[in-house]
Image (cartoon, rainbow, N blue to C red; front, top):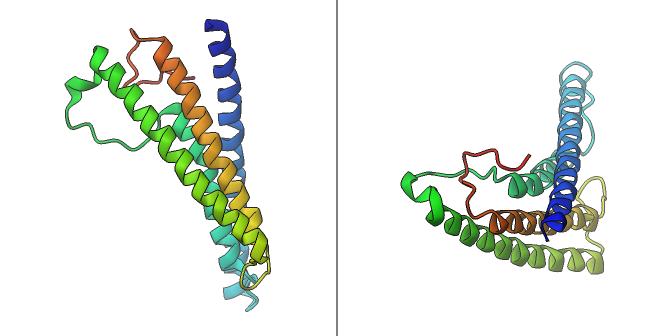
Length: 175
């Protein structure tokens, strides 16, 4: 079983790295788009047509392609009000409970976004200016949310298999 968990960890780390790189590429494209739009708008009086739509799509890509890596690496924004609960057996149990809740919430949100993707496909919904089918963006968002849930499940297996290890949010336990 330990070998299977190690293999799952390697796959999860590679998937996490892949979607993080996608988010970084999209961020770079957003920077280029913004620079071209500003130069075109203020110096050439020719802004990029549909720049607002493209920025929205890029922002969705950055956010949702970062989500799986965040879930896997436990990079959530947290507030540690009671630090002494984060250590030892209680911290291990809290980590498990929080991961189960995270997986459930991601699965439910993924289901709702999937329903929206189906509706967008059925309705032929497109963006306002460029006419980009919304189903493309929403499908990638759905896949990203489900990937986050799967990677959180793999992290749950890792945490569950190592009760003696400290899995608090400050630790770099998954590399």
